[in-house]
Structure formats: structure tokens, C-alpha cells
Image 1 (tube, helix red, strand yellow):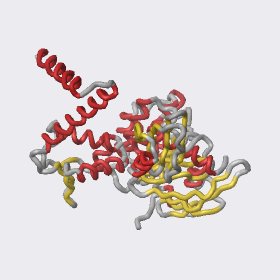
Image 2 (cartoon, one colour; image 1 turned 90 degrees about the vertical axis):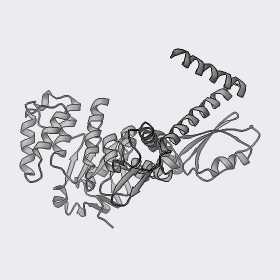
Image 3 (cartoon, one colour; image 1 turned 45 degrees about the horizontal axis):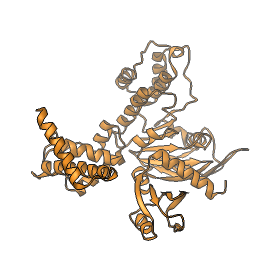
Image 4 (cartoon, one colour; image 1 turned 135 degrees about the vertical axis):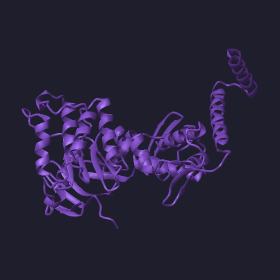
Length: 115
Length: 299
């Protein structure tokens, strides 16, 4: 369950809802507003701190890390996760790397055609 | 060490057909404890002892630092209790009930909070209890307990009989209580979804015994289900932390309660292919715990 919270926070930062250096809600406040237990949010914050996404300053609160690369990093990571999933499905379908590349090209072409 | 909201140490109670056996657990201030067990497991008996409605045969119970049942009067000023069995007066209005409870706790009663809760729960002061649905009665009872802002809330199956929307309304209000770091909640349930969502601590009870207890995240973290593929001619090694192995043909499903990365590695070394490692829901963990425990006790 904490992974869902981690993901939600990453998204908020990636989308720019929470900016770098900005203070984010305390563990207890986020738990109350998302209706998820304090311990789950605590676990998520620890994970994000470990990854360097957020920083807790003793007695001051929790902040989005001052790292301009952050948004880009998060989007990159998101893209990698989607690609990994696509690779898994491709393997299950018995597609080779060439087939996958071809399929991706088609998807991109179709999207561009829609614009 | 801070005073626990609730502490049970080696509590036992014997009835003719049921026994509560050596029950110990602790609830820290500012936390929610989900007390989970099948029907007839001893949840309500434990709660009755906690509320000093029944005296334990052995063991110690402390609630907000007060020994129970000896110091129950002092403890109960600060404990709100709602149980399934509790009934409001059918012929009286909600407003009468609010006044009734307020008269016992004039200092603690928060009338504005009561008004806000009436709104959130879609209840009206003029309504008579006999006109309320089962779900509305549960919400009304909860409102009466919440509005005097007790430091400890003890709720026996608070979400039983509620539809999904009402359940979320109740859960939101319970989380609101937790804004205050000194206030705690114990709630019993066999609805593991509610427990998984809002509990910090989880205690499983079955057949009168505590079968597991701990931090919810740690709970979810140590349980995994592994799908393996293994030729039928190869025996599966017996590894620590594995509570169940189901083998059918080449497919093996392993349930582990002390998972770490070493486990799939060990199976791989033994010649199995690890197809999948999945986290488990609290419901699956609960069922696995109870089944494993019953098997251990040869029941």
C-alpha cells in the first residue's frame, strides 16, 4: 500500500503540483487527508527520503528536494517503467526486439497523425 | 516509555465452551489498532474485558494508565465505546440523545463538532431513532462517542452493516481523530479492507489466542506468494519462513511469512524457476496466518 503513496507523491512532483524546495504535508496530515494509516505514509516518506526525492529537516518539516533534475528524472523513470512492462508483454507474445521497435514506431506515427 | 493507550499482559478468561488464552498486546498513543479475527475468535470478549464489562480470570489490563477493572471509572472519562450490540432509545430523537450524553460529560462535549458530524453523516437532530436505518444508527452511536473527544475510542465492528459510501464517511471521521497525536483507536473488524486502509498496528486473533501482532507495513512486507516451476522429479527444499507449499504438476505456489531476497535465490539454486513473486493483501495474509496456526496446533 505504501508503494501507491510513493507513486502518488512522485506524480505530484513530476507534474509540478509540488515544486522543488516546497514544504509538503506532515506525515499525519497526509494520512488524514488521504485516509491512509500514519504508518503507511511514514513508510512512503522514508522510501522517498532514501531516494533523495524529499528531505526532512528536524523540527522544520518535510520538503521536496532542491534538485532541478528531479522532474526530468521522475518522468524518465516513469517512461522506463512503461517500457519494461511493454518488453514483458512482448516477451509473452514471443515478439523479438525488431518487432517491438516496429510496433513502437507505429504507435508514435499514429499519435502524430492524430495531431 | 510513554503510557500506552491500551496494554494487555497475559490476559485469560475461561468460559464453558470458549477460552481466551494468554492475550497480550499494546496500543501506542496516536495510533490505530485493527483487531482482526473470524467470528467467535474472541474479539468481543477481549473488548468486554478492556471495557471492564467482564473481569479477566488472570493477567493485567491497563487503559490510559488505569488498571482495569479496578480503576475503570477514571479510565472511562476518556474512553468512547461503540459496539454492535449497543442500542439507542427507539422513541427518542437524536437531539435528545445528544443532550443525554452531554449531561454526563459537560466539560468534554463539543457541540460544534457534534453539529459538523450530524452534517457529514447526513443525520438530523429531529429524527427519531426508530426511523433510522441500521447504518444511520451506527453513525449516530459513533457521533455520540466522538463528540466528547475521548482520548481512546474502542469500536467493536464499527463498519459492519454499512454500505460502501457510509463506510468511507465513517473511516474519514476516524482518520480526522488521528490529527491529534494523543488520541488512539482500537477497532475490531472482520473486514480486512478497512483494517488494511487505516490501521497502524494489526493484531490477529483466532480461537481465543493472538496469532500475530505488529506494525502493518512490516506485516505486509514479510509476506509473499511465489510461483515456481519445477520438474516433478526434483524435491523442493524445505526453507525457513515458508508456511505453505501447494504443488500441482510442475507448478508450485509457496507462501512465505518471512520473505527476503534469499528465498527465491535458494529455490533457483535448487533447480526451480521463479516465475512470479507477489505481495499479498491483508485478507490473504490473515487467512494464511489462521490456517497455518490451526495446522501447527493440530486442529
